[in-house]
Image (tube, rainbow, N blue to C red):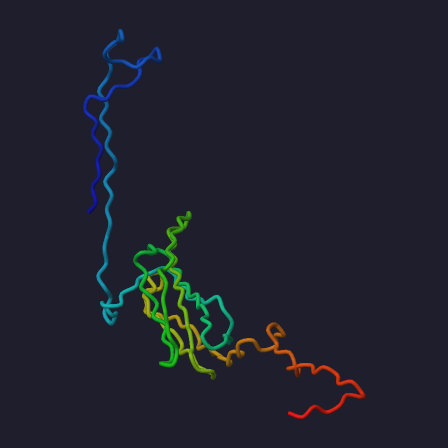
Amino acid sequence: VLRHSVHHPGQTVPDAGGARSGIGYAAPGQTVHAQSPVLTAKVLPIPDGADPDHWLPARSLTLSESGPETYRTQVGQPIERRISLRAEGVMARDLPALEAQAPHQIVRGKRRPLLRDERLPEGVFGTRQEVITLTAQEPGRYRLPPLALNWWNTAAGRREAVMLPSRELVISAGQPAGSGSVRGAALPRQQPSQPAEPKNAQAIPA
């Protein structure tokens, strides 16, 4: 049971003439007492069969990724995966971290998540966006496994799951440094010029 009350002893209100009553005014003021109504909240237990370690109750939940089905890049150049989790009735700080896996040949990094709360007439919507960087040192085709998340639908009263499909990562070999560029190209080596000998020159013994 949640109880909340506000009590302001000695607070005064304006008199009939519009002036505030109290010290320095002709008419004394009135003491005002304010109290909010009693609020009652019923907290239900975790349903049977639900995982208490990964308990995520929400009225609705969506998992999305803003990116192509096939990522393409070169060796040593990272790409970014942007995965968003949006839930109705859950604050953004209470949404779990999204651990998207990658093959062991891929170097995986993670930025600080972006948290955002929306307060709409139908309730609060929390959004958590993960930015994951992937970098490969060898060319090839790699498969990024799917990402699944279990949650509890409070509107329907059942356990549900959302899943992102697998993605493909194509890594091509980088171009050699200076390929396709004429800057710094070597010029043909020239032989040093020799002075021309006169036609009637006599041979001089060494």
